[in-house]
Image (cartoon, rainbow over all chains, first blue to last red; front, top):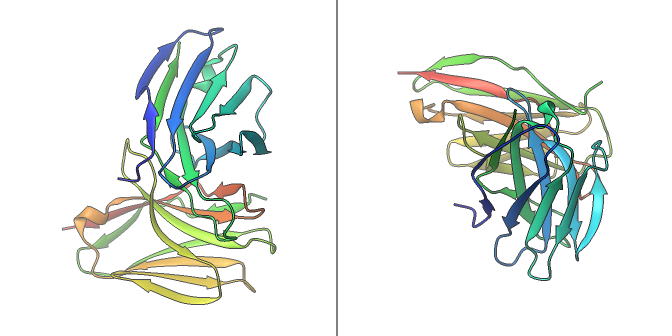
Length: 114
Length: 110
């Protein structure tokens, strides 16, 4: 167990809807990264949050947005859901500042868009 | 060219054998390298991290890094059926963005 938690575990939405996924980071960590993992693929970096600001973004459209709260927990919001958004969404927490950042994953949220 | 490339497998080895998993990366500026294990339907679990050239051993696992060849490998000695999973190679380029390969599926046959 990494101490990183995510909610909900599973979610079913329809195309066009909006979804919010939540993540609580491991104790002592100050950074949260979000990844999308499609079936049979490796995780794809969506963005990272550090000190409540976006600290890097992958190749995802603006309808993917996020927040980080003072307690380092984070939310991923996806608007105007598309069928291709169906995937496992992973949150990873880490401590930024050592130069050797290691990311630890939560259990993930499996999203199905119909 | 993909940032991180792995053979997708599947790789099958008999129980007790050595499993060898390989990964290449494209950016010479990459700084940190990781191996994660992912069981079907679960999230990735960190096995090893390696930052400098050479070998790093942790129990039955050995990670090898060759920055000149842009190559990372993972050896699993005395493979067990419980090692059957997908192994993901990850590379950290800028300190905040990890790039993952597509993973290699390993099956250990009893």
